Every structure is written in structure tokens, then in C-alpha cells.
Image 1 (spheres, rainbow, N blue to C red):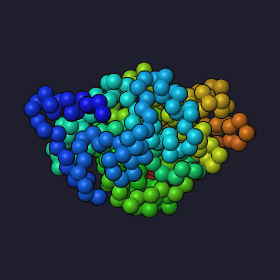
Image 2: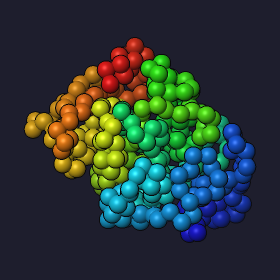
Image 3: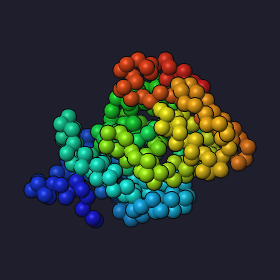
Amino acid sequence: MTASPCHLLAADAGVTVQWLPHPIVGGRFPSPVPPGSGWPGDPATRRTVRACDAADVARLAGSASNVAVLDARISVCRACPRLVAWREVVACQKRAAFSDQPYWGRPGPGFGDPAPAILVVGLAPAAHGANRTGRMFTGDRSGDWLYAALHRAGHATLSTSTHAGDGQSLHGVRIVAAVRCAPPGNQPTGAERAACAPWLDRDLELAAPTLRSVLALGALAWDATLAAARRIGWTVPAAKPRFGHGAEAALTCPDRRVLRLVGSYHVSQQNTFTGRLTEPMLDAVLDRL
């Protein structure tokens, strides 16, 4: 296995890479976690093929025959050097509150029902959230809000999502992101968004037979979903629909089924702490899906 920036950083500093126990299942894992090493919910194996550039992403996403294969390939992607370096250095350096835990340090695969009625699209994993736990919107305040709302709506087994392996499961819902790696400053570049886009394209295609609506968390997820729908041949309004909390747009599949794209303010602390997004507002949007 090629040494990661995280492991090289530790070697340069004369530090031995720590193998730490998973908070739920125990065992011991290095940070970042190698594929196929027993992390709960890891969709990949040591033999899962890796994308090393944007062309690889397009090829491997397009040929993924099902959600399991897609998630495995996403979880080992190394197409964007800046994002790979950042996610792995964060996994090595960690936040003090989580210094006793191993960090996933890999792209965030989708999570939830493989045949969803609702697809939830976020922006990207959080550096100390999904980049730590390996599950979308898990281990941070944003996830606390989202999973609590999904539980109230009857889609989530638990009202919390703290770690992979905690017993959480979703019914009729799958959660994905426009960008699958934690970006510095929560700001992926245009090139990084473009390189990652085929993963979302394929998520929409695979979900289409059972899908009735897409929930876009934030303006970037809204724009990414509209662009993905166009790329895979869905009909979208000629005039770009404007994002807003509760905004709706019609997406027409090739079989003429009409799906609903619904917008919500993102469940970030910037929105929830200030009251821009409240629990009743989020519940109201979920009730419409």
C-alpha cells in the first residue's frame, strides 16, 4: 500500500502511527483506515479499484452496477491530490476531543437505503465528522440535526448517528454528497467539484427506479443536483430554478416520471445556531418529500 500523506507526516516527525480502538466495535485501526480492515460499514476491500484522476472517476462511476459497488469505489477514490492530502493530514493530526479515536480519513460513501424514495444531497463530509466516522453527516452537530429530523419523520431507526456500527439505519432514504472528501475550509474548488461529479450522476441513475424526490441541503447541493440531472439526460426547467428554503423544481426522467427537487437551508451550525434554520422548518420540508 502506498504511504498516505498522514503516514508520511508521522514518519517525518519521527512519530509511530497509532493504532487506536474504534469507539463502538473495538479492534485497532490506523488513521486513515485502510479498506477491508474491518471498519464497520466499510464498503470496500483491499482489491477495490481506485480512481486516481477525473477520467478514472468518470469510468468507474459509470460502470458501477449497483450502489454497493459505487460506494466501494467512492470510498477509495484518490482523484484530487489536495483533498486526499487534507483529509489524511486531518486524520493524523485530529482534534483534541477525538485524539483517542482512529479517523476514517477517506471519501464518504453514501449511507442508507439502496433503493431510496428520497435522496438527500449535502455538500461534503466534515473534517471531524464523516471524515472521522466514515458515515455521511455523522459525528458532528449537522448530523445531530439531520438524523433527529429523519427519525421524527420515521426514516431513521435512531435519533442520533454518532459512529459507524452504532445501529443506525435509514428506511427509504439515502444520504450522499456533491463532493465526497472533506475539503479545506469546507470549500472544494471548481475542478474538485467537477472531478467528483460523476459519483453523484451515478447515484441519481441508480436511485431513479424508486426515487420520488431529492432533498438538496444548501445552494451548492441544489446546483450540483440540477447539473447532474442534466448530464444524465433528465429534463430540468430551462430557466435555472432558484434555491431557497422550501424551493421546488421538477426533474423529469427519461421514462417521463416527474421527481421533485426540494431545497433546504443546510443543517450547518451557522444556520441552526442563528435560527435561520429551525427544527419545525426542517420537519416541514421533510414532510413534503
